[in-house]
Length: 377
Image (cartoon, rainbow, N blue to C red; front, side, top):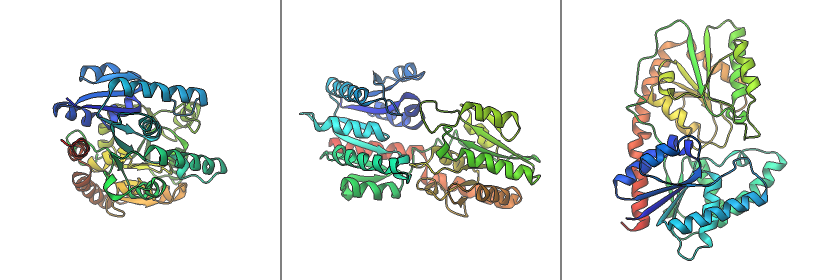
């Protein structure tokens, strides 16, 4: 029985974005392990037959000594598990796993899932540029392993990292996002009500466009347009760019938005909405919420930003706006609010697009084929 070790920051992200792959891999005869920081999903993973290993990945940086300790612990886990393949997901797990594998005598195959390159590759501050230089060097070393497959979610990230890590075509695969369960996120006609609901779901980081969402809500409210802006998600205190909880509470109490917090029924919230938006300027892969919105048959308003623009067919399944442009966001939303026929047409095309591009079953099959190719099955 060949072993696959998933390395990821935190368990809830794995459950949300990669669990169907692990479950199907178990059915296919693989022994599955996961190394990550655990919250409340640990028992769920154990019950599914996944072997768990605790590693505290700090997402905001935790000092050089603690980061070195994380590297040492990851190396110990990889040596003890002795996997045939390591599947690393997101920036730090990819870089750390790649660096550790370079030091091993018996090197497992590496699958590196690039779920967006993060803020440093899209920001233009002096600090971000310095961080980008360092991260680029680390990527070059981490991805120099001979037996590997690099999975990209959008062509912008593929182009950047191909240049950084000197990748060749045989080492790269494009898989748009982590997919959606098209049965759970099913198509429903938009609700028949006088108030148009606009939903945004994300980690409440500034770069996700939360402030632009709030400003757009204020613009439309001041115009007297009957809309209900719903914000799903919660602040991320560990991230220095998180929106503050006090800000969210203020917006909610003042009636600018309806703050729903973290929810497990996003599919139902989208079904009860008319429009879904994500005005992000973050270094996205392909945002899962936009895939889910398309699967629900909802028109999307998002930014012309790598990853976000890959989730829509412009002017057919959604509208693209410039980044950091609240008036443009408000204008695009108003256009859809005032034209039901366009909303309906875009929503129907969005569902077809999701069926063609974002079915989770197709995403799972593509991953299992990658494992098989690398392991010579």
